[in-house]
Length: 337
Length: 270
Image 1 (spheres, rainbow over the protein chains, first blue to last red):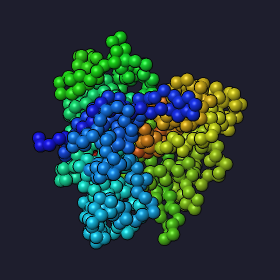
Image 2 (image 1 turned 30 degrees about the vertical axis):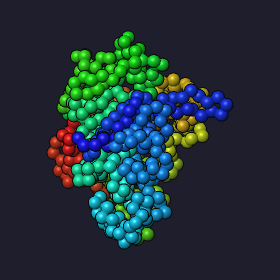
Image 3 (image 1 turned 60 degrees about the horizontal axis):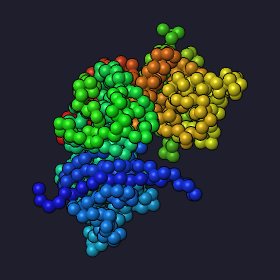
Image 4 (image 1 turned 180 degrees about the horizontal axis):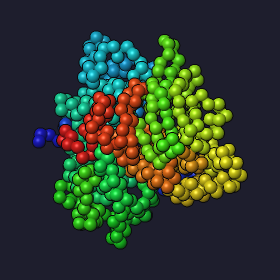
């Protein structure tokens, strides 16, 4: 390995304070003790339900969110100590695509203007003709043609708009593309096309992907490593295949059991597995101390009042006292076949 | 045979008036749905799935031409008088929409919105209606239902709001429940809970369900029969297992191929 890692996050924490004029509420942890590594060309998935802190993590990595603890290093450089000017230059390396493809395109700009924006900022020396040529090239990369340049965002479908968002991000030639639920608003066949496009960009341009999703199928398709978040804490992280084939944490098991296989013969087993795992509702409040998942966990024991630390079990790291016990063992094939 | 059909649709068509002439969005659709069965309608966005449901409710946009026949337990829905339709909607045929936020009125409490259904269709007093609503909230798995009745939609999570809509649709124990992508906006865990709930309720109440979705995983989980729609036409229909095992049309094959490539247990690129 040559040089420092592309991206390293150490022990990130983000706290929000609930608003209140005279007596602001106590700070709430949206993210706690999250560390991750991502190198050139790698794809890391962050999964969890809404409210698990996935988007907060993405925003914290891009310094769009103030950290209350921890460090984000981009090629070994601490992003927190950069001036806003230096940070803007670094942002070229860190591009983002968003969940709602139409909301992320300015409705009053033609596609040509939208695509030339990153070039105006990051490569101001380019002539208008050179910018147009690059914009066209980017459009073709994502499977659209020159006729799109003079059109407006509302003239495109969701899948096409998401391709334009990806083209815009790629024009900056980023080292890391942060994708926040990029396909959850799209139909299945279109979803597959956009995922294939991201995989292709990763292979050809060597761009690293941080892929935020609640859809485990998309994660399996695209990412070789996965990090599972619940209430701002890492529950389990490791190789995607290991995590999906033999999930150790009851929360990872719950997510997988809720992922519906496209096979009617597997439906009854899938439902039975959910019944076995279902205890608390997704909104069950965690106890003040101890494991944050305990209120929903089917395998809870007295020791769960102690906060479990992330520990290595086989190929993965897992924050569960009981992970690895035979009673918790669940293989991917039990759910899907 | 004729006595048990909850819904029988024959040659239903919907044509919208457009600037450049008429556009047919639902074309010659026929299916029959016995009591207690779940029919899944699959298709890509824009294939006419939602327009089909709206036509069944008599809610097609102004200027639309609806032709053919749709019998709800023997009662003709196509071309029925507005007053007749108003008596049937929310009563014998009910709908759950995709977005649970926009389907609830933000400034009315959950209780007021639920009770109204029973006050209008069953002539109950508000207090009787509230009591019945509370029981229905409990039946769809909402905790502290008495407190929820006094809350407003924004105080509930997305999954809870979708349960409220389901409760609202079930208040009058309809013959037919129409559900338009009811779980697409929800987390996977909440989606699975709502679908499991739907299966339980179907068993207990014996209602027929038309479930529109583009998610083949959802269909595999809950549908008894599946119809695939493409460009306004039902290109294929049959029992769920048969359709998954031997899809005949290219529309079905492409939906299934995408679903199988995108599965949590599929061998992806990694």
